[in-house]
Amino acid sequence: MAVSQERGAGLAVRDVVVRYGQRRGHAGTTAVDGVSLDVAAGEVLALLGPSGCGKSSLLRAVAGLEPVAAGSVAFDGADLAGVPVHRRGFGLLFQEGQLFPHRDVAGNVAYGLADRPRAERAERVSELLALVGLTGFGGRPVAELSGGEKQRVALARALAPRPRLLLLDEPLSALDRGLRERLAVEIRAVLHATGTTAVFVTHDHDEAFTVADRVAVMSAGRLAQVAAPEALWRAPATREVAEFLGYQTFLPHADGLLAVGPAGLRVVDGGSGGASGGASVGGEVRHGVVVATTFRRGRTEVTVDADLGAGEERLVALTDGSVPAADDKVGLVLDPRGCAVVPG
Ligand code: ADP
Image 1 (tube, protein in one colour):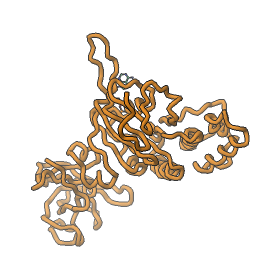
Image 2 (image 1 turned 180 degrees about the horizontal axis):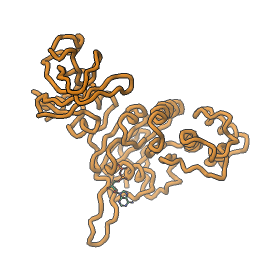
Image 3 (image 1 turned 30 degrees about the vertical axis):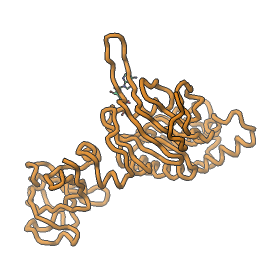
Image 4 (image 1 turned 135 degrees about the vertical axis):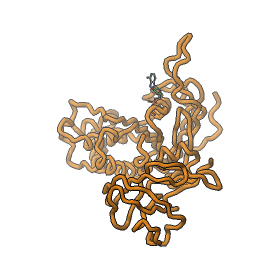
C-alpha cells in the first residue's frame, strides 16, 4: 500500500478494524470498528472508555500484537503492515509490569540495552532510575519492591531504549487509589521530560485527564470524541460521553440537554431559597430531601432525592455551608461551572 498521505511525524491510525473468533459460519466479535486517530510526535493521548469497549484491542493492533482485519497503522508516514512487534520501535507497559523476577532492578531496566557498551548501559540505567524516583534501587531484587515501585521500574525499562512510541495499557489499575493518582502525575512528568510520544489506555477519566494532552473516548469499538481534557469536560459531544465522564443528570435545555456534573449542583443554606450560595450560583431554587452526607476529598457531598426536571432522581450536591441531616428538606441550585450543554 502507498505511504500515508499525512507524512507528519507520529502515529496515524486509519479505519482500523480488529475482530476475534471469526471462523466459517461465525461472525466473531468486532472489538474495534473502524477507528482513525493521530498522535503527534511528543503527544500523550489517552484512550478512555468502559471495560470491553475495545481500548486494549486497538492498542494491541498498534503494537502489532493483534492483526488488523481492515485499515492501516503507520508511524512517521511508513505503513507498519507486516512489521513484527519487535521491529516497530515501540515500548510496551502493561497493568502488571511483568518484571523479570531473577534480575535485580538495574538488570530489568537494562533489558532493552543489551547491544550498548557496558558504560553507556550503566549510565542510562542510573539516568532512568533517577527519572522515576528510584535512585539507588539498582541492586534491589524486584521481589522486594512495592507495587508502585515495580511499575516505576517497568516504566524505566520501557523507556530505556528510547522507544519512538510508548504504549501503556492500564499501567496503574492494579494499584490503590492514592498511589494511582500520584503515579499518574509522575508518569505525565516523565513522558513530557523525555518528549515521549505515548498512547495510554485507561477506564478512569481522572487518570486520563491527569496524564494526557488529548483524550480519545471509545464506545463499543468506535471513537465517540477526541479532545483536550478541558474541552472534553466542558463540551461532551454526546450524552453517552457525558455520562461516562460522570455527569449525573440531563435536563431539558434550549440547545439540547443541560448535563449536570458532580460539581453542578449546590445545596443552599436553610432550604428557604436564600441567595446565600454565592454570586456565581444563580437561577431557580429547587428542593430535595437529604438521603445522606459524605465527607470526601475535603468537601461535603450531599446525596439528595430531587426532581430537577427529569423526574425524581437520586443526585449528589455539594455544600459549602452547614451540613444538613438525613431527611432534611434542602434548597438546591445549579452551578453553571459544573454543567455543560450536550446536543439533544
Ligand atoms: P477494553 O480494553 O476496552 O476493556 P478489549 O479490547 O479488551 O476492551 O475488548 C473488546 C472486546 O473484544 C470485548 O468484547 C472482549 O470481550 C473482546 N475480546 C478481547 N480480547 C479477545 C480475545 N482474545 N478473544 C475474543 N474476544 C476478545
